[in-house]
Length: 209
Image (cartoon, rainbow, N blue to C red; front, side):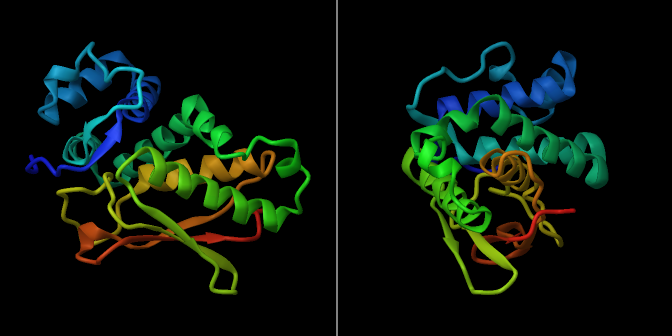
């Protein structure tokens, strides 16, 4: 297990993610995951529903590694994506509302503009409420670049392939929410676990047909 990072998610974000994992895996599954991840103290004791920054990135990374250890790379990928999507739909969307993405003025924006504004709202939300600094760039091509400068999903992990599927799932469901139900392709190109400086995602501007 990785050393404590000194970087934190708010308890509520971590609680929402763990509740999403429980929804996807079942009660026995999440308990087995917490045991495997050496986070037994969280069994029946999820983080409090407050915004205190107290859930260490190292523990979040341990959850991600535990999913891969339990289900293997292929199964772990699918489960982490599902959990990320469930985490957004079950609660993280409320954070989006605080960033203005639920305003009527936002809802009537053109699709591409809505996507850009929504992505920036998600990045600003994570940057504001947690130690996960996130930014969005538009290089002018087919996709936006969403960058996580300090990524909890892969904290303390090593891989030869990008593995931040939980983050990709959150982005996918967030884009579905801001677009009114459309699906967008999200591909991680750079990953700290692979030795790169930041975790970067290409978010394609056209919805999946």
